[in-house]
Image 1 (cartoon, rainbow, N blue to C red):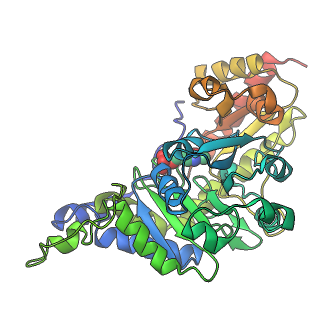
Image 2 (image 1 turned 180 degrees about the vertical axis):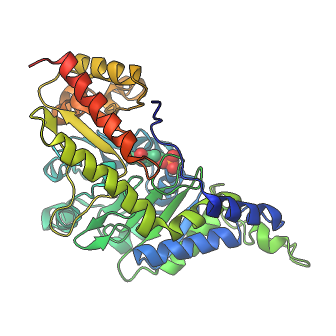
Amino acid sequence: MKIPFSPPYIDESVENEVLESLRSGWITTGPKVKALEEEVCKYTSVEAALGTNSATSAMMLVLHWFGITRGDEVIVPAYTYCATALAVMHIGAKPVMVDVGEDFNISVAAIEAAITEKTKAIIPVDFAGWPCDYDAIQQLVNKPSVLQKFHPQSGQQQKLGRILIMSDAAHSFGAVYQNKRTGIHADITVFSFHAVKNLTTAEGGMICLHLPAPFSNHDIYKTLRLWSLNGQTKDAFSKSQAGGWRYDIVYAGFKMNLPDVCAAIGLAQIRKYQDVLLQERKRVFDFYSSSFSKYTWAWLPPYDRQGTSSSYHLYPLRIHTITEEQRDLIIEKIASEGVAVNVHFIPMPMLTVFKNAGYEIGNYPQSYKNYAAEISLPIYPQLTQEECNYIVNVVARSVQLVTPL
Ligand SMILES: *Cc1c(COP(=O)(O)O)cnc(C)c1O
């Protein structure tokens, strides 16, 4: 059997929606993007959501909007995809990496210890689709001792009066925290619609705006939209209408807009997301958890607890007491039987660009521990029961071969 890691979910409804865009005479940002933004607002219950060409650029846009720049610090978990930190670096600020907990998510105690007078934002990452402890993070940024350290340097920073919480929810579309879906637990939540994510537009992202009063999320939407389209007063769609040629450039903006032909994929997927795509992921997740729970070596990922549930983006299985080398051997064995697995993530301090910048993995012991023991199994709606059985058998056999007990 050959089992790929994460093929996109493309059915007839996706093909039809994309064809409609292709045949409409309009393929870049226009009605499909607007429709997807509206669906995301409905699904997450945020007031305003802006489509972008990736989550990475979405995060850059938000950090820039908040006035974060050279000399500022943004706290990120060491255990995430590089994009979380690169978005901070690209706007000139410094990512301050902190360790995570056994649930893979950013440690709130570690955030507190890392806050300085330069801290302007925190980017929690909902690893594998399991939401971070947003209540604890909200409480932390509102603590008198933390508020005292905050030195606003832009109009938006003045207005918020505290550290911004921007959730990197690349994994967690459809996850639930305290009985409410992700999108409204941070000031701003960024989803990724990259090809391997739960909901995809091939490449794309979505900025969900949920800032407290006196901010107007609709006004921020308009600003970010303008800034994502070169700062041009008229988008290409309006300009294409007869007589609509004149425009102005009022801000040195970026080019980060989502094309309609891409949004069409996500639009078809979001309509069956809750009832089909998410349920099918849960089916695979539950099957793995019940199958592996009988092995003492298996360390199961967290999910479904007191009003909180995962989006089942990854199945990050960990094997108790193995070394990184043994983990690599197990993966080799699994691959030789045709099953594609992955490791999420190589902690950022182990990657060259961050090592060269002075980050050291020794400062992030739990991140290393999670990484060394972790194997991400295939999880997606198209997996059949037969394939799931095969994967469980192959994984169990490979673990026992490498670490005979
Ligand atoms: C995929 C991913 C991103 C980047 O998303 P893009 O849309 O590809 O920019 C950021 N953070 C995490 C945790 C991711 O997994």
